[in-house]
Image (cartoon, rainbow, N blue to C red; front, top):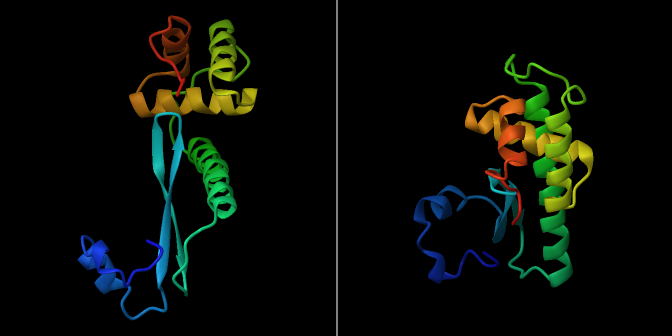
Length: 143
């Protein structure tokens, strides 16, 4: 919303009431997603009405992608769960799946394994089960 005083955006009356006393005149929301995994959103607020330039929009989306990886990495590293029964370098199929995700998403090996772990966590499967689904081409990370 480049200008919250624009009444065309009255579909968010509770939000607008909540920020009415603040010096906020524009806000922008950017999704935190990795492939099909939706993590949340980053909201930015401005003290002046303003439309983001193409460069600002590109930068914000790039930062949201990096932030999504960092948030997911942090969540997985700090989870209290023993479902991960092997290390990231101990199983051949996990390596194969990691390579497939690298090819599909164009990410680093570390980030590819992170995506596999996130998918496993979100679906209630182990990393090895998820890797088997990936190598069996039943799960893809292609956009």
